[in-house]
Length: 398
Image 1 (cartoon, helix red, strand yellow):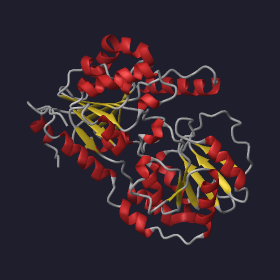
Image 2 (tube, rainbow, N blue to C red):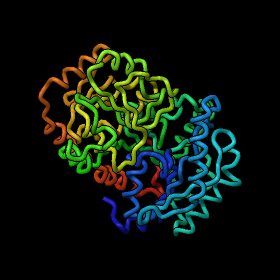
Image 3 (tube, helix red, strand yellow):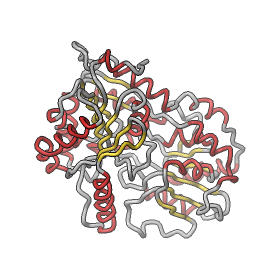
Image 4 (cartoon, rainbow, N blue to C red):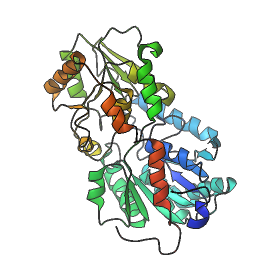
């Protein structure tokens, strides 16, 4: 396990993380947020807010305005020590091909200067967002780590040629590639120098405590809803969520209240049913209480390449809260089928919800399984994987 003096042995003095999200506006349960916040207790960390993999489309002016507004507010914050040792930086950049042109003459120098201000001179460069690929050339580093926990080339709004080239560049340059899904790691085997599987973790105490508190701590904007309540917590986006399945299930179960907690990039009128309540994005600290206010928690995923290459964080959060879980099938659910109901198609999905509502549920087996899946334990795995990076002769083919 790494300790506070590990950077002296390894040859690096901090981590620059090119994130896949924006610290100020996205749910802080994401892998890079969770791992970097904990690594910051061992090394200084500069978290660079997402550079973006696509330009927001003008076809939906509301979404366009929201995204541009968030980005401008994030930029105005500059460099901030958000937590001890964990610094967040929002550089001036642009998505897509324009970002690649900006990398060497604008983006790289901004990040290097920010790193120097917090005492990082010989970093590990950790890249989650593919748009940061060329930074492997613009920022001198002791080693490069690629975080491959999302299949960004399957993102529908991205330029597949641009993102595909960025990912290929990172695979060729990375000294270590970190995965959260076994099948995606297997696909890349032989293409990268070294691989490390770190499945997503969970803040077990936070979610289990919320589940035990139950109705005593219900959020006000769902407390008036009759039971049973069926909740989805997460973004409603076409590349992950299956709106057609969801609408058929909702139409079938009109005697239940449905709740969606999270942002939505679909048209405003996509779900007209009165027994569905959208409460919008919520801070990470409040998410567990919304899960706990439900009787059944669902994951209505589609079968996209993105889902087939992911390891959803909310699975372990749902299980830790201690409510029945109904999900569509996806590769990473293997190993968890004994704890959740897996239903393929709207009829089976609706039936599984009915069964979950009508059955007596024991949260103990699931909680026992996920208790050991803490983010602290996952960070220990990552820290162990970083040992030796930056020293001579560390690169070897997986």
